[in-house]
Length: 324
Image 1 (cartoon, rainbow, N blue to C red):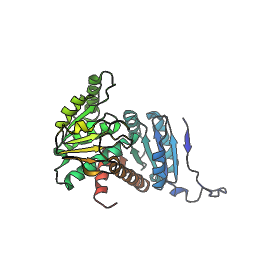
Image 2: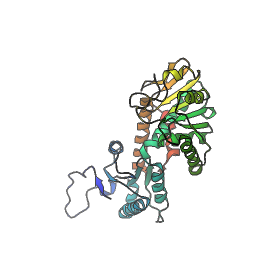
Image 3: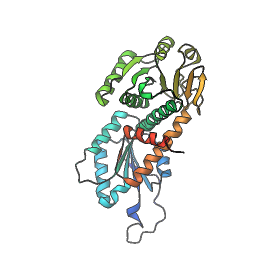
Image 4: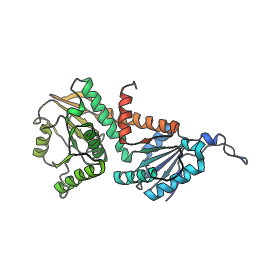
């Protein structure tokens, strides 16, 4: 396993002494549990002001424990707060296992920040829910926790959003809509069981690959979150015609075609069909980027928190309370 520094320290001259202001250098270690590093997170980290970003791939819990210990011991109590760790990768289970390994390190207390955002799922789900809450209230459509919510998609964003919504008190259904999925009913049951076991939330799972099944499902929903794979349209106009009005639809798919026909990337409670209001992926994405930037900047400065999906939602809500 190799780590690569993607930005040189610069032209500081070293002449038998420590690099000038070394104690103030902020370092972010990105632990990717897969083999494809995220250029998005690297750019965000440098834009947030980190001096150095170091990336590791295929990181296991055992790797993370050793790397964190080495980093913190080398910097000591005075400098450990300038050292942060970012857990990424596409696999929720692997990322959360790395987080648990770091949290369980048995060493004297050295203060540092840990950010976990596998595949952007935590920040995206938090931004999507915070924005929807805010839109419902400002449109005088009630509170999100009183709504029946459907998530169309079972990837990392859909799963974390389902957990957050369930913890808010919403009645939540997560649906697989992939018509090519083998053993769809069995698969979605496993997803629901996993969310109950890992996060302690009761979520209904259903397999709805066909028009009739989607229509029946969406008729019963107040808020619909389309979190399917990029470039796949899940809801077309024929479905919109049959599900009734009084719906809010949220789409995070920024790759054409949209997940919901008729929705535009920048929509912010625009009426996309009579009685159906849409929130588009650019609207969600802008808040997601603000949120990640806020997390990175705070982590760099304070060095004392674990930024998980619950804290992400709290911070996204706070961002919506203040101007851009």
